[in-house]
Length: 56
Image (tube, rainbow, N blue to C red; front, side):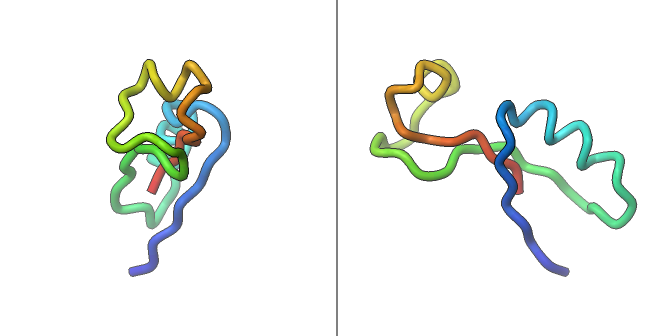
């Protein structure tokens, strides 16, 4: 099995699209990059943490 990390705006949209693809076994949403340890959704969306929303 191979693993990919993708960023493309809101992770909810990416997650839904990836779940439809044949061969995708699981999809996990999270954050990448940034300067804040363990950010929450509202902090990331504020644009102040430097994180990107991603899916694995």
